Amino acid sequence: MEFSLLYPQNAEKKTAPLTPECINDLSIEFIIDALTNVKYEKDHIRRMMTQMTDDEEVIRYRCDVFDDFLRFPVLREKMEELTLKLKDLQDLERFQKDQEAPALWSLINRLREIDDYVSCINMIKDTLLSLDIQSDGMKQLFAIVTDISKESGFEELKADIDETLAKASRLRSITIGVNLDSLLRPKTAGIVSLNTTEFTDSGLMKRFMTFAQNKDDLNDDLNTEGKTRFHPANPSGALNIGVSEARLNLSTHETFFETSEMTGGDPLSNAIKKPVTNIMKRTVNDIKSTLKRYVNVSGYSLISLLPEILFYVRWAELTDKILATGMPMCKAKVLPTENREILFKDIYNLKLAINKVKGEEIDIITNDLEFNDDHRIFILTGPNRGGKTIFTQAVGFGVLLAQLGLYVPASEFALSPCDNIFTHFPADENDTVDLGRLGEESQRLSQIFDVATGKSMLLLNESLATTSVAEGLFIAKDVVKAMRYLGCRCIFNTHMHDLARHLDTFNQETEGDSKVESLVTGVYEGHRSFKVSIIPPQGMSYAKDIAEKYGVTYENIKRHIDDKATKN
Image 1 (cartoon, one colour):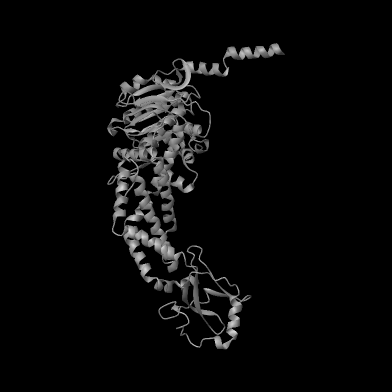
Image 2 (tube, rainbow, N blue to C red):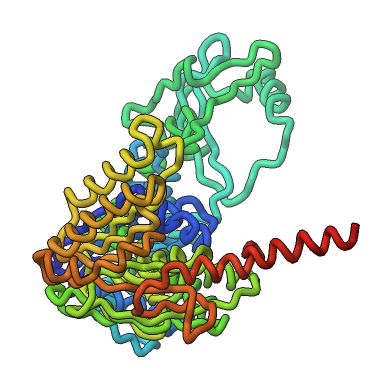
C-alpha cells in the first residue's frame, strides 16, 4: 500500500510547477538555504516547494501533518533519526547488489538491513504512541507501523537477527585451502574453517617454505579426514580462480587479489562465495524469505517518506526559530476554491524574518488585506523604498506556504487555493538584448495570460516601467482590463499612479467580477511607514515627500549652496 505524508490516500497527485521566473522572483533558493546546508536535502525540498497543488483536501491534510511536526519537537527528533536510517537503507541498495557481493557479506548486509527496518518500525510506533497526534496522516502512519509490528513472527524476527548478528560479529578469520600448479601458482581454493580468532603471524610464507622442504609433511592426496574439514569452493570440489583474478607479483612472489571498490568483493571473496553459502545455507534462505515477506512487501515503502519527513522537519525547525523572534506564524485556513478569496492579518515578508533569525536588527512591519468580491486586483503605488516589492513578495510567500501545508508569516491567513503563482518582475538586461526591455516584458506578460486562469495569483512588480510613462501606461491599462476579465487575483506594484486613477473605468467598462482597487504603501495615518492602505494614489505628494527626505528640494539645495558660500 502506497502511503504519503503529502497526499491523503486515494488523492490525485496533481500539481502545477512554478515557473523559473516565479522561483527566482520569490527567492526560493534563499529560502532553501535557510532550511538546510545539505545538498540532497535541498534537492528534495526544492522539488516539493516548486510544485503547487490547489486541492483543498490535500492542503488541509498537509496543514494538519505539519501541525503535528511543529507541536512535538520530540517527533521531529525521532523522525529525523528515522531519516538517517532510511537514507542508509536507500544508499546501500543491498538488494540490487546481491549478485555482486559475496554471500557472507551479502548475508551480513541483509541482516543489518532488516534490523534497521525493524528498528524503524518500532521507533515510529513507540514515538507516535506517546504523543497526542491529531493529523490523519500521522494517525495513518501509526496504524500502518502497528499492523506491521503485529505481523506473525515480527518480535521473533528481531530476536533472531540480534542472535545471528552477534554470532556473525565473532567471525575474525577464514582458513582457505589452495591448490597449486607445478609453478606453485594458485589454481583452486576452498574453505577449510571459519574462525573466531585472527591470524597474527606475519611469517606465513617462511613457514610454508620450511614446511614444503620437509617431504614427510606433505600430503599425497586430498583426503583431509581427521586433519581438517575441507569445504570445496564448488560442488565439484574445485573453483578455478584464474590468473586474471589471482595475480603473482614477480618481484616478491606474492599472490594478491584485486578488490571491487563498489561492493568490497574480490576474486578470493568470490571464490569462497558458494562454500560460505553452503555452510550457512539455512540462515541465508531464512533471511531471503524474511526479506521478501517484511521488506519487499511493506518495509521499503517507508523509504519514499524520506523526502517528505525532511521537508516537514526542516520547515518546523525554521518556523520555531521565527516564532522565537516574536514574529507571528499561523496555520492557514482553507476556503472554497470558487470564492477566490485571500484574507490575512499581520502578514510580513519571510525573507525579513529569516534575516532576523540570523541576527539582523530589523523592525518588521506587518499588514492586513483581503481579496474578495469587493477587490481582487490591487494597483499598489508608493514611494521608492516604501515597501512595495517587499509586500508583493510577502503575499506570494503566504499563498505558496499555505498551499504547501506550512505555517504562514502572519497572525491569521485564509485562502481559496490558487492553481499557480505567476510573477512578472524586472528582467536582467542580458535577457532583453533581442527584444528590448519593452518587447521582453510584453512577451512575458503574454505568456502568463496564455496559462493563467481565474484561480491564479499574479504578482507584477514594476512591470512596464522600463519604457516611457505614456507607452507603459497604455499597455498597463490593457493588462489590468485583461486581469479583470480573467477573474484572477493580483498585486500590481507600479510607479504609474495614473493607472490607479482609472478604477471606475476598469470596474464599470470592462466585463468581469474581479474588481480593481487602489492600494498605497509608504504612508500610514499621515506618517511614513511600510503599512499598506486602501486609499487613492498619492501622486506628486510622494515625490515631494522623497525630495524632502533626501534634501533635494529647491529650498534645501539653495540653503546648502548658500552655506558653502558663507564658509568660503
